Length: 235
Image (cartoon, rainbow, N blue to C red; front, top):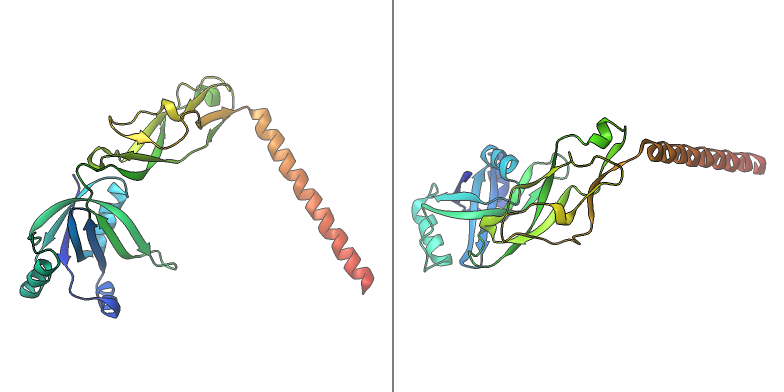
């Protein structure tokens, strides 16, 4: 399991700006079996972990003593008197993140420690593999109707991704449906099993749609020219 280091955070509110300037991201850990804990993580370390795990895979969050050990320990005990959290490890999901709207940098992270008995919902990416014969041999276009799916299961069972092999799409009538996707035991996809995931469109259909789009563009152009002419006549 991927691991990420974290420390107990002692700075809050406007003080968190000073953390971000040092490439430290404020975070919080919570879940049904623990009390909320304010944390901080290294930006580069988190970005590397996020690329690998995303929001659907469990990671190990290793919480260590902060710079001021005495204050951190006192705060940890006050927030969760029945649980010693310093130098502990938790299996967590990267539940939510906040980013800067301009540069995209992470501003805050919510780590969720799920119950080992209660199922959770998560969005899982679909990864398409192989080459469809209907594309290679018949000149069709692969149409991916879905890129992700919502699933439900125990956090430890959630896959990082769901692979979709398109090599069985041999004709334009072939379809891969939700019910055809393979998931780990105990993981349920929260979508209509008859919904189409991917199929191949005939080349004629693609050409017709492109022609229709061009025609609409020409119509809009003509309408725009008429409007301009009417404005000019009124002047």
